[in-house]
Length: 403
Image (tube, rainbow, N blue to C red):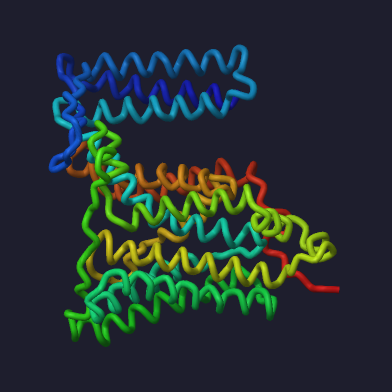
């Protein structure tokens, strides 16, 4: 019932947007990305007002169907369809009388989702072994700082990336010792990691990087176009003409997905997360498994931190992660502790972030403060709507005491 009402409210909102639009204007969606070598695709031109009204009518019809008969097991799928239609309708409204480069925004979405994905994979590796990692934000921030400094001093981006991964592993080892060995509350231990990273990077930035700016100029990884695949229209520039850390993210994503659900290693990790006593009974080293997973997760998070400085910006700024570690936790929950699900959720947050940037450029009549809040509002909505239904590993956050 509530889902149907939600559909109808979305339809009413879109209809109201359509009423305020001038007639006769078109929305032009560019499908070519400037500078790419993809096959040319003509722009997609839509009648702005008519498109918004049609999408509103479809959403209203789906809402009425949900109220009258329901979609059963397909409710979540229909929710995804309606949200996708809502986004299309909103973009059509925003681009009315303008040219909106859709491929460029999709490319930005992937770039903005990459560090969130790294953080979410870190969370998955930890929580599948029953260790809550609130310290992802601190690991990302520390990795960004160390990656920039070491990359600058060594004159090598790969050395900076490796150093960032190692500092992430070091902080993760500290978290593991506190949470596993000394059984400190895992939320408190993770909060300590975050505060330590924020304070330490801020202090070192003021003491050293502001005095020696050459220590904060590592450069950036350049995009590498994959021959053949990068020429695919729309998807080619988005997926196959990116910097190397995006490709590394995909490799880690595939490895973690297969390792967790298709190998004996993953079965043991999941057993430790669900029922550590039973796992111990059959000879699985519970504490060792938790230590190993948390440290591996730190390596992933540190690499994600390097993405900020060595792939996106090219330098370090104080608190430049801006809460992306907490958004990564929301993506992990939204993705139901599944690597692929977490990546798809990260794309949602990345899209919200890319959208607010694009809308500010288009000068839509929405206060800039609300646009900046968009990624965080999406995070709150997702956690509020999903966290009650999502089931974490049964032993998540519970210390294991060997009998």
